[in-house]
Image (cartoon, rainbow, N blue to C red; front, side, top):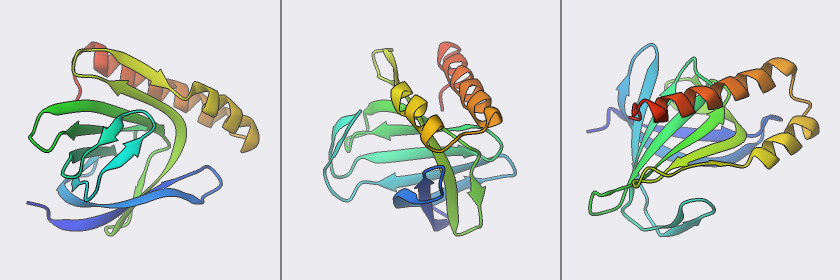
Length: 156
């Protein structure tokens, strides 16, 4: 199913890796990378709650956009949630995807509820890391784009 295994690195603005994991590359073109991963153990996620071993994540990384979107399916296949990260556009070396996470997240639950998360972290980190005005504006634009996609029922 996957063309190859790729490392995904979520970084903070200062470059340090916040989280790293592996995914199988199932689609790549000049604009979009799609990976699939399966959780090898149960984890507790701050926003999604309990994620069971065997949960499948389809991960969409647009190479020029300021967000990525994950679609989580429970081990039996039912949709758990969509999860968008507001980020700087990723880089892709063929073996790794690296992106800077700008803290704001959006969860879309199967019942249609939409929750914007971590605005306070964004406000804190834009001062801590001295985000340039362009980064702040692009993050806000990315959030607006994600909310428009959700409203248009265009989630992957």
